[in-house]
Length: 175
Image 1 (cartoon, rainbow, N blue to C red):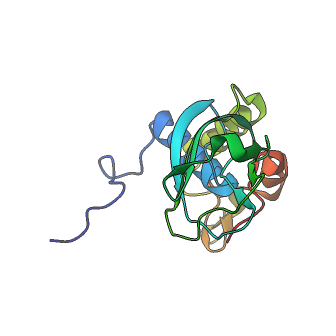
Image 2 (image 1 turned 180 degrees about the vertical axis):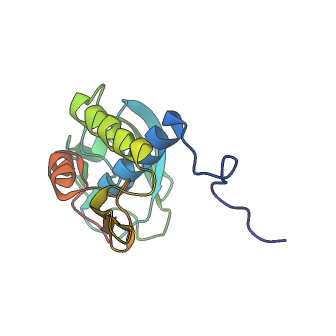
């Protein structure tokens, strides 16, 4: 048995449901930024330890550090959290083990109207032209050119101006 497809045709065409394209645009923005952005949520994250004094966590808006362990030991009282996602140990070092750090945090933005507007714009672009935006059309001999990004349809990939708008929300560290 093969792996099932991620999306299937609706009849004989691509999905036209606006929610499908909103979900796709949201996933594209979150993947680019490296975290969920909004809404503000509480979650537990398991991190690989590298032993230093600082550990980076996947957020650009840490609201609260609720719980924190390193190698199973509670180190909450020994940590200085940064709102930008850096947890610094006052004394000692973080775990050296993979999955050796566990944190429970409250993070994200209560709202991000600029990101919401961008997602709506991307979804609108995609639902209007699920195959990509037309950048060249000719009637004689019937030529049509769709916008692409790296060979893929440019209906969901983020444009340079969209990436600029997302820069304040993007994680700028890691692999």
